[in-house]
Amino acid sequence: MTDIEIAQKVKAKHIKEVAQKLDIKEADLEYYGNEKAKLRLDLINNDNVNNSNLILVTAITPTPAGEGKTTTSIGLNDGLNHIGKKSVVVLREPSLGPVFGMKGGAAGGGWSQVIPMVDINLHFTGDFHAIAMANNLLAALIDNNIQSKSRNLGIDPRTVIWKRCMDMNDRALRNIITALGGKSGGIPRETGFNITAASEIMAILCLCNNLENLQEMCGNIYLGDTFKGDAVYAKDLNAAGAIAVLLKDAIKPNLVQTLEGNPALIHGGPFANIAQGTNSIIATKMGMSLGDYVVTEAGFAADLGAEKFLNIKCRKAGLSPKAVVIVATIRALKYHGGKSLNSLTEENVPALEKGMPNLERHIQSIQSFGLPVVISVNAFSSDTEAEKQFICNHCEKLGVPVALSYGWADGGKGCIELAEKVVATANTCNTIFKPTYELKDGPLVKIEKICRTIYGAKDVVLTAVAKRQLKRFEALGYGKLPICMAKTQKSLSDNDKLLGRPENFDIHIREFEIAAGAGFIIPIAGNMLRMPGLPVTPSSENIKMDSEGTISGLF
Image 1 (tube, one colour):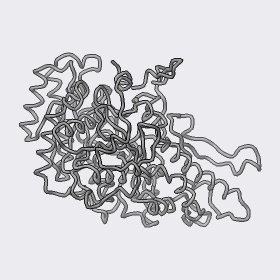
Image 2 (cartoon, helix red, strand yellow; image 1 turned 90 degrees about the vertical axis):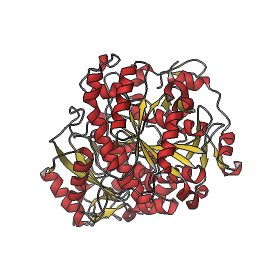
Image 3 (cartoon, one colour; image 1 turned 180 degrees about the horizontal axis):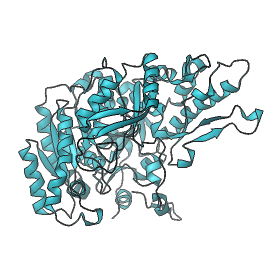
Image 4 (cartoon, helix red, strand yellow; image 1 turned 45 degrees about the vertical axis):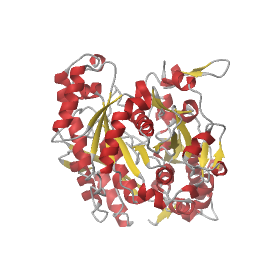
């Protein structure tokens, strides 16, 4: 069966039954039908947070063969419940861009999924729409002020960096001109769209602590400059309150369930290649308030999602994982070893061996934070015994625990070995993670530390435009903010053609963006874009619905 057929086959529990597993009272649920609910923020208990075990799931560098990080996270959560642990999985919400584009949804796969799968992959509880509306309200207020004669702040349209957003891949909207049509249309200017997952509003929602903090952070969004050269912020437009009002429900985490009826929180959805790539601080703390173990994932590989999870999110939230699971597949490692995509199902131990340096680089990156690592080999039916034995032996030689994971085929039962090794590792962790850089470091020093320690780069090269922008942001007082790298997910470098473990390469910073409200500086490396495009054959072409409303083609 396909993923969607499996999800449709399983009869979901009423969400109040799932809530009971976490001792949540029915009065604390805000129902969105029988299978979804939002949770009140006052369920967060900081004492419980401090006693819970946070498990981070990350991965090797992504390949077209797929790695299965979300599938592993869900399977691990079910596996922990199988061995008697009170565990919750906390994930990000899928973006419609990848769902209808190329990557597909983000609800797991096989027998390790969260349900209702169709709802989660589509509109869910409306969080993404609320974020897009909040983002675009601010854009409208900016253009309205530029047009106004009586309340004009003197904003120089050429300096406005705030863009509109939509939750879809649409390359035609990357660069546009607005306000055509004469005087009544406003003042024409160049602008563009980002995908919703790249909006600073999304980043703020995922990094705020409560409604008051959300409103404050929204007010601190930097928009551009006046003709006199003074910085303009969202609070100067009296916009923060209205933005926060649009997010009053979106700030609440969403409770759903796995196929096995175990609790799952899904909230927020920033991409890891252009934003911080993790679910919200609120959802993570909610999970840790309700469960003894919380399994969460960070987008793409350890060089992107895990690095930002630790250096940005955990630093802000005061959290530290007890173990980090790195997901790898034999076929993906063979791809990194130079094997072609159409031959990955053939046994090839030499190619697997050549691809292992990519895994080793990510192990070293996580160990640089002082955190223990567990390797999860997401197994496929095409994997041979010789290949499985090789990767297990290799990890053991590295001194890193390894488990074969069969969550896709067998659900939680297929992840019991992984769950046991994660628990054993977490029980021995008594350390707090060590950040890659200190906030007092200058921005360029921070970037260099990330690029050398996490990517294995030789040097960092800035364009003249990037140097000028960075100087401006430092002058505005943002030099002590953390760094949120925007870089291709397909390579440890900024060149997506360099697979495996590239060496002796430089990271090229094309330009900088600032997310003053969210609280980080964004260096944009290589050809990275914040509005993706659709592939030649988008996934949307395979999605259909019959006369009874049954959907097929989602994955």
